Each structure stands twice: as C-alpha cells, then as structure tokens.
Amino acid sequence: MQKWCDIYKAVKRFVPNSTTSSKEQKKAEKNLAKPQAMSTAGMTQTGDQAPQYLDDKRKQDNWKRMQLRMKGIA
Image (cartoon, rainbow, N blue to C red; front, top):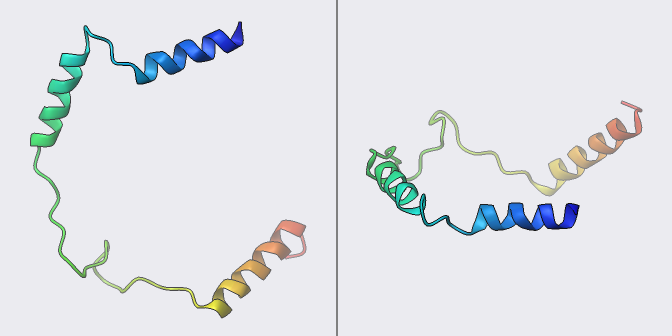
C-alpha cells in the first residue's frame, strides 16, 4: 500500500494538472517579470571582502579538527 502512495505522490508532483497548469504558467510568467537583483562582476555577495580559498594545509587542519570533535576529544 505504501508503495502505491509513494507512486501517487511522485506522479502528483511531476505531472502537471491540466486545470492548474495555465494558472501555474501565469504565476511563473508574473514572477519572471519581476525586477531582478543587479549583480556586478567581481564583487562578492557582501562586497566587503574577497572569497577565502582553502589551501591543502587548512583543509587538512579542518579535517583533523572535525575528526577530533566527532570522536568527542575536542
């Protein structure tokens, strides 16, 4: 029974309903017509600092710290 309930939910989610499909299309068009945020090339989201990239040493240190924390040592 649960298998059929899951199949029904999947079909409801992925197959458009003919009575609501035009309403959904209008809603999508309305959302696309809304003004979009301006994005400037080269700016970070906060705009005040450059993104941080982890080198191999920092990745290794983070991994070790995570392992210690998961084991309950740190």
